[in-house]
Image (cartoon, rainbow, N blue to C red; front, side, top):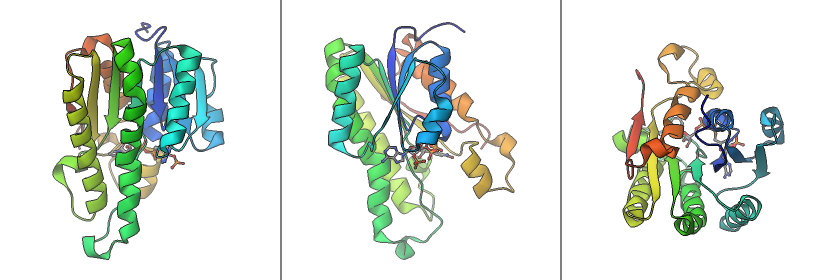
Length: 234
Ligand SMILES: NC(=O)c1ccc[n+]([C@@H]2O[C@H](COP(=O)([O-])OP(=O)(O)OC[C@H]3O[C@@H](n4cnc5c(N)ncnc54)[C@H](OP(=O)(O)O)[C@@H]3O)[C@@H](O)[C@H]2O)c1
């Protein structure tokens, strides 16, 4: 493997999750310094095989915690070259009028507010550096708005719009922002939820991680303000 990310510092939020873990391992393989946020200590312990990986238990919907996290990274590493936000959550399978209104707030917090707080925290540092790549994981549902998942679809649609608008603001600065749109990912959680599915058709986290690393690399400097489908055969 080439060390495209040697001497680069990247933040992968949700970096121990189904997709985040694959992104973290892919960056480590390419020699990046990787900082992850996590919620379950055992998940971080299972990933921590190298001194190039640091982890912080952080609620990324909490603005203050996110600012402290980013200040800490900058103090330790002096730079932040990429942010990949894989934090997100799903709620669905219930008619609009039957869903608890609390779900709406939860979906907005985890799928929209997370990216908002993170982008607000990292963009000033990236502007000072005159470079940086932000990748926010949204969803196909943010485009095609399936039934039974109004809160989820709305939160992901808003996340795409937010990153698109941010990308316009960032034009000419050297800082790029893009969204990734998975349909379904071959994760353990999805396999348990839909055991009858043909898992071979589902994109694997490692395949999506490769797209994300490309977006964060210098090969992708002309990709800015894109929402990239990673549907595979689904
Ligand atoms: N999996 C799919 O099929 C699919 C499809 C379309 C889009 N996506 C999107 O892709 C992204 C990654 O999905 P995934 O399957 O990897 O999900 P995942 O396994 O649940 O990973 C998300 C990670 O974020 C963490 N997290 C949740 N809320 C948080 C918070 N407030 N602060 C910090 N961390 C938090 C989760 O911790 P806990 O485990 O403790 O909750 C988990 O480690 C998400 O944005 C998801 O919506 C996934």
